[in-house]
Length: 148
Image: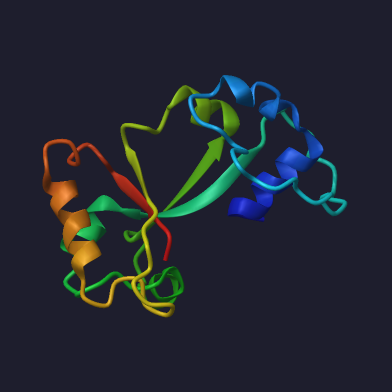
């Protein structure tokens, strides 16, 4: 199980990580409706007590060198590229996220989709992303998570 489903599994079986959510510099529930009761999920696997979520991110080099007008969808990258370079598999656990372990190397990009079926039809968002990754502030990032 990867990504959000695995994270939801962790929270459903061990809600302790969110006990101190009010002390975070942002709100996890601001103006959110009350969540529905989660469906029953299997127990957390035995282990060292940590639960991690696996994400697939793009290497920053792939984004910078991509010749197209806009980035392909995740499914297209997964299916069309034979090398492992574009996709970097990263396991994040709650402690690493709270400590900011990956904040210097991982860029998360969430942006407005310009059309329902095409997030970046004119390539403006990819152009802006490349511009940032080429800037002094952006050159430190090794991988990019993007919502497409």
